Image (cartoon, rainbow, N blue to C red; front, side, top):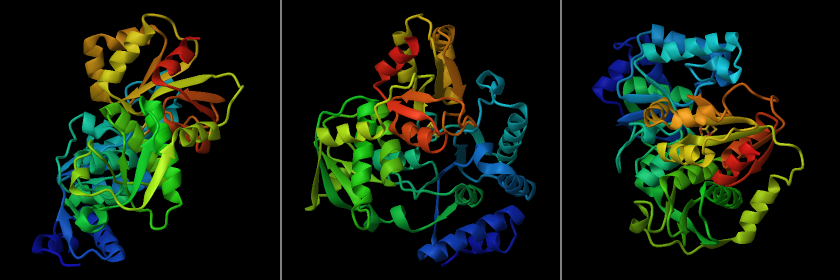
Length: 398
Ligand code: F3S
């Protein structure tokens, strides 16, 4: 891989041991993927922030990078942590976990990483523009950045995203290159898709179909007439989870779609496929003991809607409302938080029902998110059901 003189200096340790380590990670990645050079990046988003995922080995690595003089060279934000940083006790997070999680956040802060812990960085100021090269790692945000914003990123791991932050570079391969952004298959949607749950089910059905196609081509969707930001974030989370997709195009909606003609290979997605996706989660009789909204993190619009739906009534089940700190602060100012908290629902700010250490704590979780259903079952061993946003709130109140 060809390096500039500054990149060579980083690799030779002239910028300190952490930057050297970061450049070594990028050089190794570039070699594996056959990159010819590094690209400057303007934005980074780092996953693997929860102590539940990192453990002591991850914490040690971060402390070493921070101690070795590692400092973010570009705007860098974090994925959700394992707890609400300002109120871990409110969610029943044990004190020894909270202490370790704070050490993780402190190590990132020492490296000048912005410690807004969210999987929707694009809602809170980490918003790259069309064509910009970035290095993000949360899968739902990667799909959103590539497809909806038209920025360019591979799905980075935690260490490679940190390496990109400390050097301001990423290897030029994969979705950074024009040739890998061309669609190879058209998915025609023959069902009415409206609401975050239905977009999640579409991502689930499409993802499972994509998994069966050789080479997993970039998908070009047609016949989706409209989609809100919230529906797209739900779809990105689900399609990335069930199909491993980092990029797709939607005719008439996403910015690069118009550059391409629909591919000749066509697959149809029907109402039955969505029904199959829903049924594959199981039809459950088990009483619901956990309700959550906010996978990916709720937008301000969704929080306003939630406050309206609750209408000052009391919830009867454990109900987590997950969002980022900046959105929560705006919700505080607007009076939405008071309405939500007075209902008995709990804000789980900076975290979510997947990365918090709650495996086995609940039996049956209801949510509007197909991604949360996947990890709720696989990681946390819950039974899971998907409903519309409105029906999730009704479940909490019943
Ligand atoms: Fe975000 Fe957690 Fe879902 S990180 S996408 S809310 S699993």
